[in-house]
Image 1 (cartoon, rainbow, N blue to C red):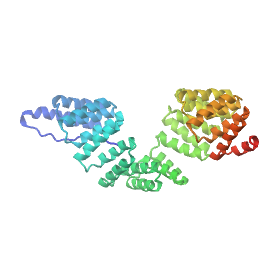
Image 2 (image 1 turned 45 degrees about the horizontal axis):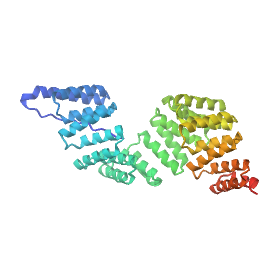
Image 3 (image 1 turned 90 degrees about the vertical axis):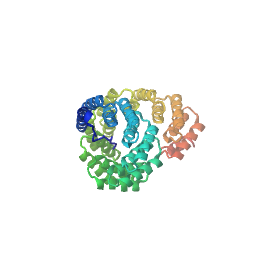
Image 4 (image 1 turned 120 degrees about the vertical axis):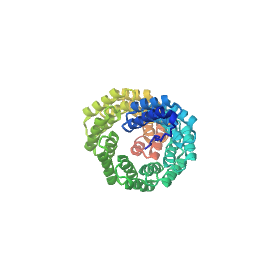
Length: 408
């Protein structure tokens, strides 16, 4: 979790400008109170009034930059941070806050890293600087540097659960599952409240194939944050993958309550309904997903898959064609349209699709199998058998029977 650092200052005033400076200080303190209540518009108004009196105060500019960042006015925030740094280039927090805006608002990870590095040079004992630099480094795929910075953050502050949690996530991504579990357990020992700690431990335990404990952690995440759609969705997918279809539907229903506009919740519930033979309900969910996101290829793919497997070949062909028009670099879409065309006896068109699928994914066992079948159907037995042999080598389960039938 990132946190922007608000300046709290004690103003040193001389007698000549006491009243004016004291008024600026009052506006500044009012801005801080607004910040604490997440009234960022009010905070900006008060910081702006303070700056009208004292336009060269870096702390006022810094704090207004934070409020602007929180309202996603990243350009305005950057302007304030730049000016505060011009006024005082010795404060690490100014560089740190500007780095967060560069990272989050503009995805300028390298520029953010430079600012974090400057902040660290000014204050090497601030753990947040290392932690957030690690996040930017991960954004650039600099995982070794990120790991070093998480280590440094933990060395400076070994009592911050977020540092252990993020290091655990990185280790999990690197398939160092046992080490990741150790870190996330440390995070939970330090603070047992954050729901995302349980969620990330669930992901790690899934990778360790400790499924009963993973399920318990998904449930703990839901219990600690019962209005978070992501946690219901993740638990729903976990149940779906283990054939617990009614339970997955219950979780997808909850995800929809808290995030009703997410089309993925509908296509996921459609898959569960399909597995329970509720075809009407599954198609209704696909239709809703398409209504919500008509330019999302997966919505048409999901509906096409259901239509193909319920013998509406022409409807499936239409949906797979739409999915391909939205994303023509997906090998699965091409493979399924090729399969549909074989079912429609459009063998040459199927071969064309499967050629593209194999070009996109040379290890697609199903694409080789289907292309082999299509070639055999148009009497290209030798070429077809070569494809079937390749499908068998890749492990496609039906290839051996096809070889026996067509390649004697």
